[in-house]
Image 1 (cartoon, helix red, strand yellow):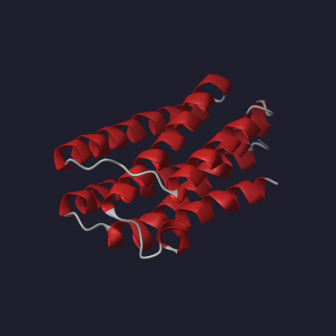
Image 2 (cartoon, rainbow, N blue to C red):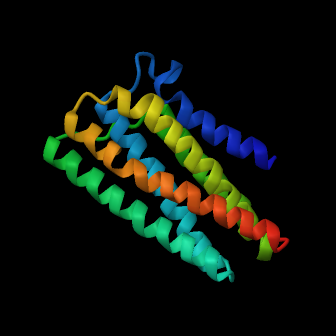
Length: 176
């Protein structure tokens, strides 16, 4: 069931430019996807901050909240400057539902099982976000400033993925 949730989330991000958005997402749809994807990680991070007792997991969750909040502020500010209203779309809706499902699942866990589920999700989520950025969002952005913002934040998402993988390995060693 856990694998299905990860796969569904990855599929939502991957399909950002396929059948749901036939010719690929437009800038308004990309803006909605970016804001939603960041908010999903902010919400999960805030939940993890409040529910983990593992210092490394709490530190990682704090980083997710801080970094993704900053990206959302940049994206929202840019959208305002461009007079671009984020346009809801099936991918953004699917991301939101996946985030809600993830938190629903996390609510059923505690201790090492919670930490493992949260970190495993973060690994899968950041892999999916990077794939969507590279294959769909950046290539389909027509506004140079929107494209530049996504290119600029991409290295942070790579760092998040590496941090999550390191944490995943450490939790595995401790039996968490």
